[in-house]
Amino acid sequence: MFEEEQFEGDILDPCCGSGRIVEAARDLGYEAHGCDIVDRGYDYYAVCDFLKSGMAADNIIMNQPFELSEAFARQAMRRARRKVAMIMPTRRLNAAGAWIKELPLYRLWYLTPRPSMPPGPVALEYEAKGKEPSGGKQDFCWLVFLKGYDGRAEVRWLNRDKPKQA
Image (cartoon, rainbow, N blue to C red):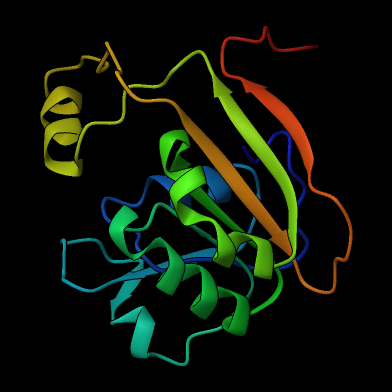
């Protein structure tokens, strides 16, 4: 995502779990930090309930609990100074309906090929064994909202298997 969508300023992941978004952002030179509602043992974030917090950043990027997507999107739009990016199961887009239309949706990135995104503890088990999870059964997309944007959302494909250019 960070190699295709440009962000200006710092990044906050308010649902950072095992820290993959924070680490990916930092690996590409962004100033990034995170928080989570429980302490998961990582030293680079605070314990907080983002939905009740005043935490803010230039950009908020998250893999939120999907059943709370609307609440997280609305809070992120209040707290972000520039962009909000959130991952969603594609099948939930139709059900989301009105709230997505009410927010300034700038881009929609479909992920291809389908990723395997097991729950955090399962992903950590795979990682501990030196394995990559496979066999994803859900399609996912990134929704990117831009403060002040008033136009049609652009649809793009984020091809995870695209060869790196020199």
